[in-house]
Amino acid sequence: MFDTVYYSNTIAQWLIGVGVAFGIIIVLKAAQRLLIWRLKKMAQRTVTDLDDLVVDMLGHTRFFFILTLALDAGGHLLTLPHLATRILDQVAVIGVLLQVALWGNQLVAYSLGKYAKAAEGESASGATALLGIVIRIALWSVIVLLVLDNFGVNITTLVAGLGIGGIAIALAVQNVLSDLFASLAIILDKPFVNGDTIMVDSFTGTVEKIGLKTSRLRSVTGEQLVFSNTDLLKSRIRNFHRMQERRVIFQLGMAHDTPVDKLEGIPAAVQALVEREENARFVRAHFKDIGLAALGFEIVYDVLDPDYIVYMDIQQRLNLGICRVLEEQGLSFARNVPLAPSPAAK
Image 1 (spheres, rainbow, N blue to C red):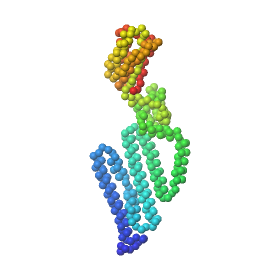
Image 2: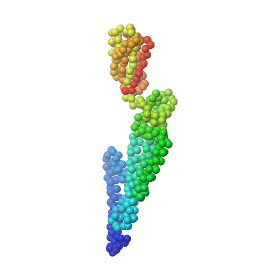
Image 3: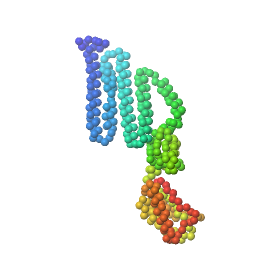
Image 4: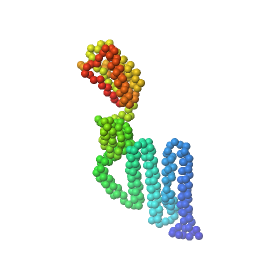
């Protein structure tokens, strides 16, 4: 009975082929469930989420993938027509490619989700959604081309046509694409985020929104400033929100008739005033130059709090203290010499 031949194979060979296919299906499904169960147990004891990703990817391993592999393996144990063997091989390749695409989709979703969770904000969500669409289109385009190539379709002409069409579209919308990729660069590199106070060239404002084409700032004088993302990346940006300390450099101009012994005491007096401030660190005070208009002193100190109001309060107390000290010693500033501090971010 088992030696009876049907379609070039004995009944025994058919049973072996079918048995191997069923065996592969059972083993792979059992291995899938066992791995998912073990990894879920392991994931509960670890802080990393990579094991969660592996569990998710195993959970998205489809039955058609296992089935195509089993049928192809069982078919190779039989004597089948060349066309049938070729169809089984092609179906197996298609199953593998589709499963790889699904795994890749899960990997993209994991990576972008992790970034969006870390970045937060509406602009980050928009950028990650856009980036996800671009990556998935590229992934599935490659899969479709590989499937067509597996069926014997000459994809060289198709790839060349897609390339030429892509270049034509890119040239037509190059400004939009430039701003679009600049938006992605801003979101990913984070030179600034929503809420930061920045200076772009001579404009200062607080970032309100990072869009796909433009970014918008609220100026310190109240109006809204709109910049293209490409222009922002080309500009030198000062981010005041990330300032840790504020360095202040200012000048004192004393009258030429100030006695030398009084000039010698000015640096120490200014140092004492700075050191009395809780949020200030004295750096130096020097008799810098002898000018035609005044005897110039340069004072440098650091404000340990980046808040501009804190800096102004300290500078005001220092100015009043200096005026008080000079008044007590009967000294005066040189005329027509401005007393203007010039803070700089450190």
